[in-house]
Image (cartoon, rainbow, N blue to C red; front, side, top):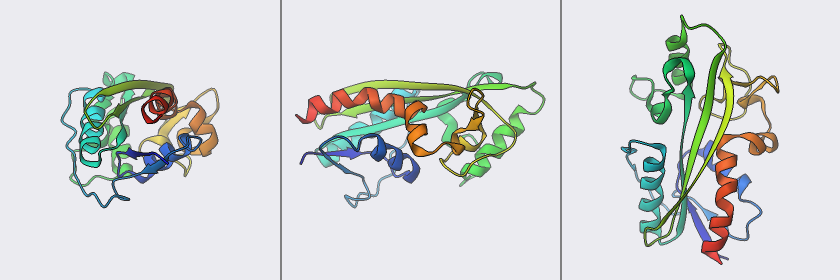
Length: 198
């Protein structure tokens, strides 16, 4: 069975990747499965740059077709910040997801609600020789001041889908993987992966 590498150490993200790709006849391996411990700096100036850096790095090291993503939260009132800096938005060293959510809400004090926002995801699929393919996904919503839900990670507990009346963290995996930014981008990447492994 062919293998592809999922270039992430984020357990929440890996769980989503695996659920989205479970219908493919291939073995999904992670850097942890391969005993790879690497800190790949996200020094790009765009989501595509950062996704490409991770995908190319792990494809080169593993010799496998590799999928990586870079995603972020864009809040309209903050001129689409934190964007590509979503994972590093809180200046506190070692900040947790909860710290980042708290910091974001502090930045939004003084702005009138609703705080419109969207999640953006760019997926990069890399061949071992370095060739890259990209897909994107978006989902629209708004930031709320109270955390709701225990599913998901990152900013999910404060990202509300007004039409559903639920936050990203209140959605069960099946529903999240129908409408999330990451699910849209990964589903678009599936034909590319199929073509590369056939």
